[in-house]
Amino acid sequence: MKKKQVFSDTQLENLWTAYNKLVHTYITSNKIKNIDKMFEDISEQMTMSPCSTRYHGNYMGGLLEHLIDVIGAVIYVRNYFVKMKLDESKLPSIESCVFVAAFHDLGKIGDVGFDQYVPETSEWHRKTLNQKYKMSQKVEALHHSDGSAYLLAKYNIPMSRSEFQAIISHDGAYHPKNRIREYEHKVELLTRIVREADMLSLIYNNRKYFTDEELRN
Image (cartoon, rainbow, N blue to C red; front, side, top):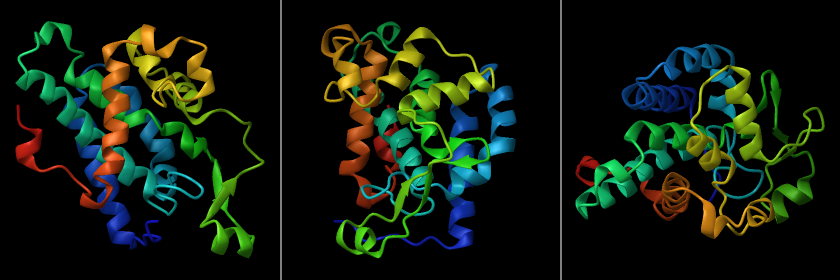
């Protein structure tokens, strides 16, 4: 199991800068104006948030670290199809891929001003289960993918139907809420690309980032 990561204040700032730069590089549509409004309210929460209670990224900065990795992975996966000479008109746009990758786990912050994850106070849970965080009782329970869609809607950030599907279904067919949608037969390519990128980012977790060469077409 990966040991707890500790980021300095400067490293946390650098994570936010890297994430924010990726968002602004690839999202150039009218989405970006309201994304920036949302960032004004939640940038600190996003920077400080872990990505889970006890699994990947269960430390401050873990969420941003994971989102950066998934953005790199989704570009990598999409470029794989380009290299295989798949008709690009059949591929989701690079902006859609990055948009979903950048915000698929947004709901893990909770809500504006109310953190989803709070420090675990039980020493047994911390030492035995590596559970550094627990779910807050101050935020209504939502699956984090649904929470992501909720926050984007809260700031009037437009989504296509396929982007919405990819965000709320990115956990894949193993999750009960996706099985009822007959996930394997009915999801769009965008959802499949983001799902694979999410998994690939965990495989590459120790590498931190994809290289420039891997991200080229």
